[in-house]
Image (cartoon, rainbow, N blue to C red; front, side, top):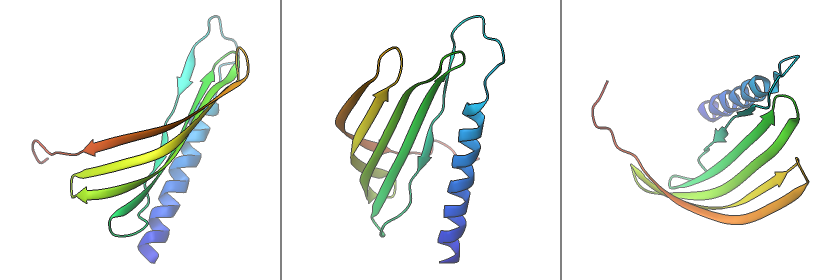
Length: 117
């Protein structure tokens, strides 16, 4: 329980730090540039089941928020280095015109360690 609370606290702190990092804008911008950030948490639900919580805010330095990508998903750890995921993605576009995109997504993650440090 204590380890879980510590992991959750670290996840929240990383989320807050990420949001603070993308909120900084220059006072004067001569040209349009964007800052993209990815905030990701993968808590365990059970021994083999995982939760994927992803947010990708995209900010234009002179125009403010342009796009947001939110992707929750469920995953299954098949092997120590293989997991499969299926989820939903919502991508609202704020500029130049407001519109929403909704879609399903899936992925397989393969992890490997070519050498140990």
